[in-house]
Image (tube, rainbow, N blue to C red; front, side, top):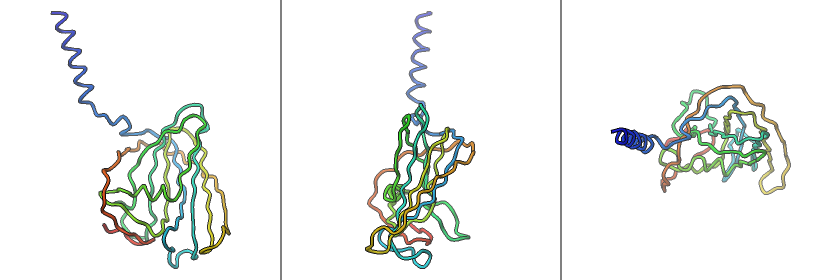
Length: 195
């Protein structure tokens, strides 16, 4: 009888493990947030809002600790006042892990890929204006490198900014990858996104 009870407990425990959600990273508890401005031009200009030219942002993220840190990231497009937020103007949080003393770079093309796919479509940007938002449990070193140049010219502006953390404790939901899609839309800067 005792063997049967032990075996039943073993089967029940195994069933719980199989049925339990596999999303080990479904939520991430964080204590720090970084909002990094990004300005990127791809196939056109920002219209009258920004001087004509080519703009790029490169964001460097470094783990200064001796332990692994999971980092949540999302991107929020800048819109016009009164425009509703959400839909595809703010990507869901995704996460990545930084090893001890590891550094990574996120560039304009990486940011554009955050929007492919999003809600079943891929967004082709003429230009991007917005914020990369990073959340982590530990402080990070975050810098942004901004470059700009006139059309068909060499770099004429370079700036490096250190991004200060905000102490914001929150649990962020981490979303898995969406299935690939062939549906695409083109988006102009500062225009409402309508799929």
